[in-house]
Length: 267
Image 1 (cartoon, rainbow, N blue to C red):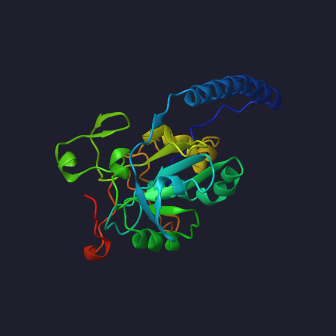
Image 2 (image 1 turned 45 degrees about the horizontal axis):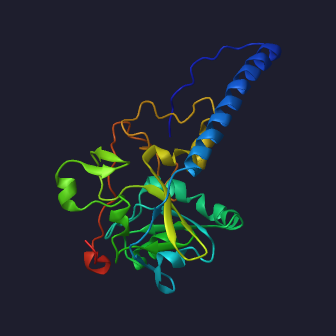
């Protein structure tokens, strides 16, 4: 638990506080307008037709990318970091996933299907999903190139070179899996288009807990951490003696002790 103190604030009268709040409100409204303008630009992005066939495995067997739409025209896929043989999913992805179940029915009401996809085999996904108590649709891309084509999984030989292609550029990366979200559209003719993908801090606004922390005096309280999300745990791992190592860097989840049960059939 963080014990960082809040810098001593300037204490003023209610009238002075209200004046300062109204000044900030004007800036918040301008930021909201800028955010709306950015969302409009995002919707104006050109599309790419998806020509490749992808096969996923779900609770009812093998499905195609078209099947993932579940009868709707829009599809959001969260690229969940759960690699073959991992003991558990990435804590950061789990931080986001704690909000998915509540969003799924609301998105469906707006012609949008939401699913998660990981490279881990389905049995491994289901085991972790059961542990975390989640219900959102989650599919395995273990038998296809999907994760590699959308730049959220990295081959050992690429990692060995010291940098991989992620977030639209070459960068050092400390894991064989990366987080991201991709959006697809399916028209009346059944054609599928890739409309948008975002990675790294592009996912920041999807993290509800961060948005709540941003309105508190301490904010995210990550300034003294070597790795900003070093404090994040799976929700079943916060205990009374919870502590944070400020010098901890990102560490990929450990591999399973039984690799034979989770063989990666693709790469």
